[in-house]
Figure 1 (spheres, rainbow, N blue to C red):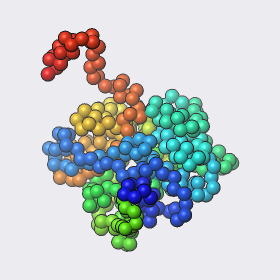
Figure 2: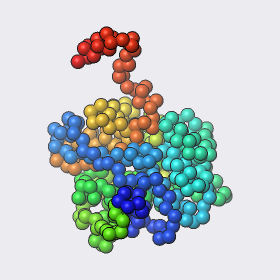
Figure 3: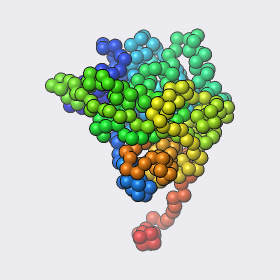
Length: 378
Ligand code: AN7
């Protein structure tokens, strides 16, 4: 470990991660992401809600996937794997490609042709993944990956790989450490349903009776203080999962054959972690809800314009849902709420520019024109 600096979530949370002690850690110093309080949203202030945004877009490849990928790739390498594979709506492929590059192994990624955000495609290409664009959607890709991994020596790094969820649970640990307790509500966008399941694992571990035995490698020092203990947690949040209306199997109660949404990250009709996610909702007394693309994009813009925080469309589903449930009183006044912003806004510049009506004014390059424009707008 580098003296005095954070070196990634495996070093920090080693004692609660299922990895061999002597394994070579594949890390890009993921995790330790900001938890930022909203200051300017009317609904939130009126109802005296403490709303925090967990900025998972600040991970090395710009999404929460890095938490799971560091553990899955570290584990795969420790088992002697030379190649990994995933189906992806984009972020998993970007993360798998980056961590495979770091490890010096091959990554095969299956992505739906024409339905992945430009930034994510650029990442998979730059990191040297072998990219298979399929004439089909994520769910088609997922079922192909399951089949091909049975007959070829490639390790699946989708969230059906249990090490992915183990890594992703560390987001809950960070939130509890930052707040000193669990929030009352935790809101997430739901696609394949791995992340909401992983968060519930994390909160449940922290609230388990024997959690005083859980100690953490601190990650911030060079041996003087190797372990810190976690806050004693007595409660767990209600988990709220939000989907796009055109890709909402948890709302319709059955697989959606042709999922459609502008939030391509969550354009998934057959979530692989269906049962885990449903259990998280049931056990926590939470709920699922869905919102239109228009509502999701409006929230994306609202966050960017009023809080200075730019997330990708799928991520905005969490705040869309939170604001709805706060306004309608399902989330009581005064509650502490965490929304996960799963991916960075820069992942998908096309959608941002297309939906945003910001004025782009072209003027002559002279002082008069600039001055006139400023005075017009002051
Ligand atoms: C930004 O990359 O499934 O419910 O293949 O990229 O755990 O699937 C991405 C999912 C939310 C949904 N927000 O999380 C993939 C992929 C963003 C995402 C989700 C995804 P899960």
